[in-house]
Amino acid sequence: SLVVYANMIPMMKVPVGDEYMVSSDPDMHRIIDGDLYTDFVKDSITVIKKNGKHLLSYPGREMLVSMYVDSSAVYTVGQSRSGKGFSFRRNGEIIYENRTGVLLGLPDRDRFVYAEQIQNAAERYYFYDSGKVSQIALREDLRKVWDVKICSAGVTYLASLIGVSSPVVISDEKMYSLNVPAGMKVQTCSFVQGQQDIVEGVCLSTGGSLTSALWRNGEREYMFSSGMTVTSICTWEDGICCVLKNQKTDTWAIFRCGELFNIPQDYAVVGST
Image (tube, rainbow, N blue to C red; front, side):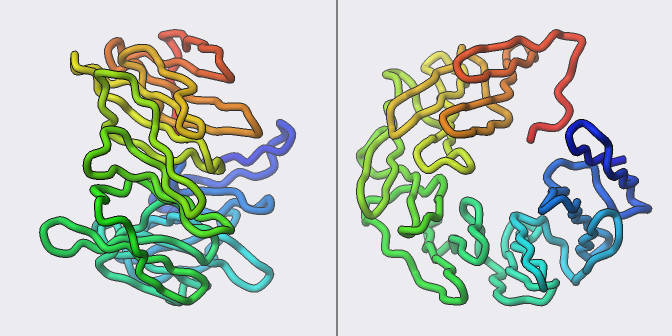
C-alpha cells in the first residue's frame, strides 16, 4: 500500500497492484495540496486516480512528466512510453500534442521545451509557452543540449559547444562553463530541480571510473570519491542532500550539506526520489 503521513501520523492508505491500477513506483505518484495523485497504464489506457479513486483516463500509454491542479481542472504533460511523442492535457483532453518530439527538462505548468530530430542526428528545439510554439534560435556551434530550465526571464540551457571541453550554461544574461577537473570528461549532466545555478553531473576519469560532481554557478562545489554516483538529489535554500551509490563496492551513502554518512550494508535504499 501507499501510505500518506502528515506530521508522522498516517492519514491515508491506498492499495497497490495491477488490480487497483496503482503503482508503487515513486515516479508514478505525487502529492498536490494534500491529495495523492497516481498514474497507471493498463493495456493502452492511461489512468489517473486521486486518493485511490478514479479521476480520469484517456487513450495512450503515457508516463506523466508533470501535473498541476487548479480549482476546475487537472493539467498533465505526459511522454509516450515508446520514447517519442508527448501531450499536454486538461482533464485528459488534448490541448497540445506532438508525436515525434522529446521533452527537455521539467515543464513549468503550461510552459515546456522539446526537441525534434532532423537529418544527420541534428535537433531543432521548440518552446511551448501558454499555447504559443516558437522555434528556439541557438548557437551555430551547439553540439548537444543536456538540459533546460524555464524561468520568468525565459529558458536557460545546459549544453556542450564545439571546441569547448566542458559543458556550459547559457541564458540571455550570461554564459559560463563548468569547472571540470583535468583528466576528466563529463558523461552526463543536468540542472538540479528547483535550483537555477546548481548542476549535477557524472564524470569519467582517464582510468575509467565514474564519479559524480556538483557545480554552483559553474564552480565545482563537491567532487565525490571515485566510483560514487548520485542516484537522487534534493535542495533547500543553500542545503544539498544526495543519495549516492558506490559503483565499485555496491554500497550506499547519504551526503548532506558537506557531510557523508555511510548506509550500513544490511540496509537498502528503497526508491531513489
